[in-house]
Length: 156
Length: 247
Image (cartoon, rainbow over all chains, first blue to last red; front, side, top):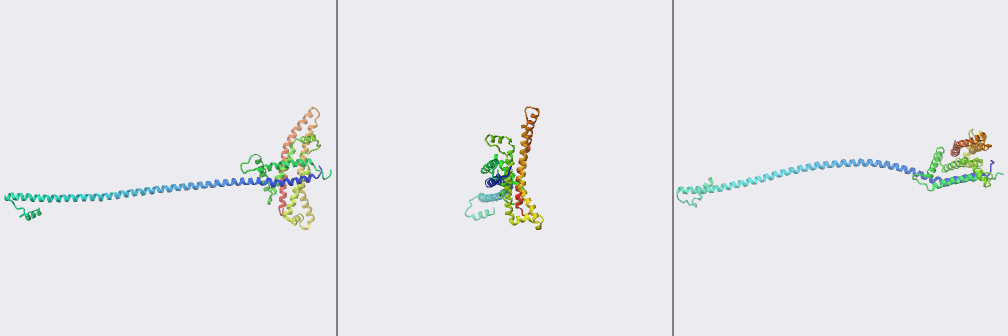
């Protein structure tokens, strides 16, 4: 129980162990703990950021969807408008074409009528001439009475 | 035996325990990963975190040595105290067979060991006192308070006692607790040795030895841990005081 040199030995051992611990034990363990803390913190931050990104992406996708819908409805109204326009122009064109055809036909008919009248007039003059020659009993010189006949035809 | 005698039992046991501890910690520290900790790494991380948080709690200055110091003190003292829980006769008996007549298993029941530690701590306290406060500051702290410069001798006496009391209380507290604990183990063990023949009294003594040593050992687990913790905490507190300008 007496105090002796064990004291010094113990103190020296103590110093050595503390030195060893300070040099070789504490730093790596502490570094690993710090690194793990950092990893966990990073992980949490990443998760937070990912959540945020997800929210953003959801918002963006909703916006894109909305835009697409808008575009579709716009395209549809445009198409409808265009279709009705086409129909309208077609109608107008058809009407014009129809009018033109009708006008042509009318002209043709008029011409036909005119020609028939002409023919009829000629025949009537011939009949009148034949009737008159029969009545007079002699040949009427067609050449001598041409101007008379022409006057008659013009009167018909 | 004069001063230069060496208590080999104390030196060998404490050296052995310290080396084993440092070996375990070093082995873990070498292949530590920041991933999921398993096995010994788990234990060492718990130990480091426990020491680190208690140092953070009571040490306010910045010093990279304090936490490893506290770790060393806690586990070294703890393992030395823990030898108390070995059945008291086994190791001495073994050594006796090997031709060593006397062997003390618990280094912390040797005042040399506890004073050795306390002197180490005391030197650190002195070193940091001088380093942080300067020679003038530290001497001033010893002589100029609490009674001002006219009460210098009384101040020096009071503060000197205050200063010297630190290592002495540190060493004697640990030694006293461990020595008393060991003494009680020995007394309990003597009860069984006192039986003489198969009588009612002998059987009673033998049975109560078993029960008492069990009870005392269980209680002693607390003391072993607590004393190591107190030694560590007080060391940290003393060093913290050495780092403070005023206390």
